[in-house]
Amino acid sequence: MSEIRERMNVVDKDGAEVGIVDEVEGDRIKLEQGSDNQHHFIDKNLVAEVEGNTVKLSVEAKDVKRR
Image: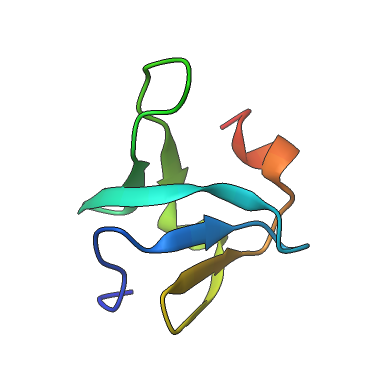
């Protein structure tokens, strides 16, 4: 997943916005701070595809927040 870079949009499998990539740390994607002033992380193995400036996940947004 070397094509994932800062400022890319991250969406869930249904296209709902999850966040914006802050940086990639090893095998995790660090999202920019949300309204809770916390960084959230997504395992790269949840990425279904990268298309243009968008990282599409293989799960719903609600499932991402639990990880």
